[in-house]
Image: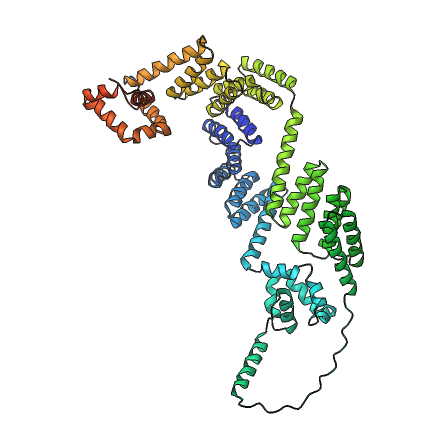
Length: 565
């Protein structure tokens, strides 16, 4: 008899392969054998979470904690389920409770950090100040202020710079500075519109009101305009840096990357504090194919950006570009790590797609590198030896190895299906049998494997179709003929009412879950046919002449819905 530990191993194998539904099925059967095993509930919680069934994952996590309240991983499962369901506060409490028991648990610490980061970002969003923060963190805002006559002298005032830095860090602090006329001018420059303070608006309204009361304005004596103070020579170097950047951009668009890089070099030399220049040069180096130079520029941009507290979108862009260069170098694992860090800075659809594509490429590369038909055959032979010794979990493991080494080996799928059947893992057995038939439609064993699973699950009608299809490819196969005979015996027993009430009820419940059966029973014509067959022999005889109708009636008889007395 299969033990709970053996089923747990089967479930773990499915989980590692991303087959979460199969993993849940295996863990469920294990729990039926050992209902108080906290590890089984924990593993099933993880499998539900993998399939994003958060309520089921939470239910198993809470059961895990109930069974073993001093085990940190149970709280980790609960935290993951609540996090996935969007209950950030609940997730935080769960991870914190786990850490109280196991302060050094890396999984719990990482989970808590992820939740707190998500809560921080959500809080910023709820505050509705992200757009203000983005505007004040824009890399070219200070340049605009330095070049605008109304604001250029502010950039040399320490208290103004401190005020700007405060709003950058905390956009809600803007409300504290709205009465400062300098801040109103900053908003005008940043948004490109005239922004008036409350005092300015009142003054302007008062002037208009006074003007409306005047009948004839008194003649004014000419007033000499005061001479304007000479404008200070501010940011000439900055202007030259921006001009060099624009020249670089123009060359980049023409795909003249050497010229673009030379101009970006000049811009960086003139203004080494502007991270965007490094990002632009990195892009040019990437297109040119100088991947090492691109990565170096990206790392410099990230380091510089952190030191000057640059906008997180700029840092994220540098990280994504570094990831792109790493992909081109074939360093997929390093690229995945870089993309993930970029997404923690700023989540964009482009970076997420690049991450998913790179993860798939890495998985495909690992799969391709592992292929070896010779070793696959060796693994299948080892599986056969375990099967003969009735060591079915070990056999499954070896057959899985054979499939990993040679995914086109239909015999490995056939043999693993037989092993799963012995373990009563019927869903897995059915999938393997169907895969075997897909790979080699003329291989009779594939049909016997599939038919046996359907027979054991009392899907006799489906089993009849499977055995019949197999006999088309191998008409003399005795195993297929015997399977077909046994199915007809069971169908006839049901049709003649020879099954127990419990057996008949279970069979009908399974049949009613079949969409084809549901369609037949919901058809008004078929309902009338069934009524006529019970009450009107003459009409029933007419119906029997219609092969389409009789095929549907036979389907109901095979499924146990209709009985023949």
